[in-house]
Image 1 (cartoon, rainbow, N blue to C red):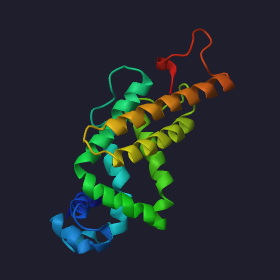
Image 2 (image 1 turned 90 degrees about the vertical axis):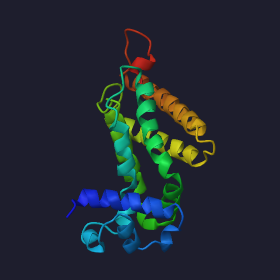
Image 3 (image 1 turned 135 degrees about the horizontal axis):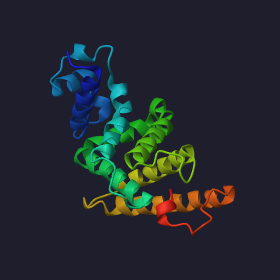
Length: 205
């Protein structure tokens, strides 16, 4: 029998494939199991339809660390690079993913858990960029700022039509610059900004 993690991953991939052509509300777990080439009993005690929806963010978050920590560029550029890996991983699943995201937004069960998923995505983005420390600003505040940035970029990604990520990249760049500016203001307010030289991109975020 496959491990629970593998069952969830295979189930989620199958769910995304099926949701590309059918409303999520019409897809039973039995159909997902069949598409995943698993038996329905493989999912018993492991995952149901709701669990597969909950696994969405964590599944795509893993793409952010696929290439390792980016080369030594500015913090903002490193975050941009790793977060874009997430959206690039999402793109081949666009149709099914949009259907599951739409369902998630109409389900109170999932809506109340969304902030936690955003926080986890931000934490992994910072870790993937080598920025999950308290340098420059407390890691907790950085996670909050990046969670907002990822949410804004995802809204832009949903509107993409040309497949070139133009809207996504513009929203992500704008959001990261804004976060960089606000965290810089916080450092100056708290006295944590460098005093020996002006603040630069290399000391931001």
